[in-house]
Image 1 (cartoon, rainbow over the protein chains, first blue to last red):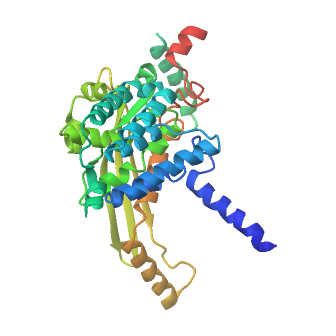
Image 2: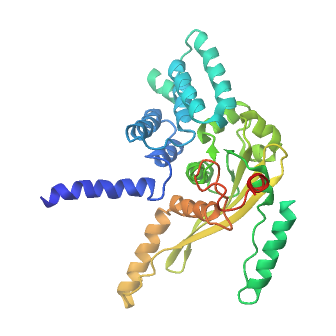
Length: 132
Length: 228
């Protein structure tokens, strides 16, 4: 009985610690994900999964999506060579934030150009991981 | 029109208050309110300390507090990578570049420049003192003018073994100092400094357009002209 109460309580405490009580946007693990990315840039999978998790959580909760996160995720996909999904997320950022329009148009053009080229070997540390 | 008049009113209020308390100097928000940026480009951080990791670690703490104030914050990692691709991987080059051209590259209304002045953990007798210090500057993307600037120094002192006297207290203090020295909580201090620099009314950045409080903390020049 007591244990069944404890688990959600702990979860609530942990969640509160992440987003803060007065947080306007849903940040999820964004902060920690970004820190971990700078701490260990070679761990591309964790970086991409962390961004994706925050986006999905915010969407599922119908919480306010923080600025920049769609674009950050889109760029991570772009670096992996997944230009199609990268473009989809750049467009999401652009639709949500008019201020991002100029930059997102640039990023979309870039990704389209890259997408048309014969698929080069994946750039970035994740590509290196796959090859080894 | 409203600038000088408001300053006069502030002066009058200050004169009234001056009789009882010495108020700290109020920052001048006229330029920031007139520029009314909607979007802020957070550029890579200049690091004036010996800790080589400080710059990128710090960068991970800054998007949240700026966005929470109600501004569109450009994706910091994307921005960092795009600048690197443009040959601007050195943050001091980015800081030295023309802010107007820099902001034009991203379509940003303004740019936030942060410099790390201190990022250190020092033994002081039997305790460890962790210190971080930052300079924050927001520049206008259209004119290059400095719109807002702030400095923050935040410290944390390891537990001095308080309460327990004698040898037990001394050992507790030494252990606490060693633990703090081994893994100083720089990130917590950096977040605290950011919150103090950007947040409080009167010294921080006024609410941006994405917060419902926008325009309620300081009268906006455009609103004052239109609605009143």
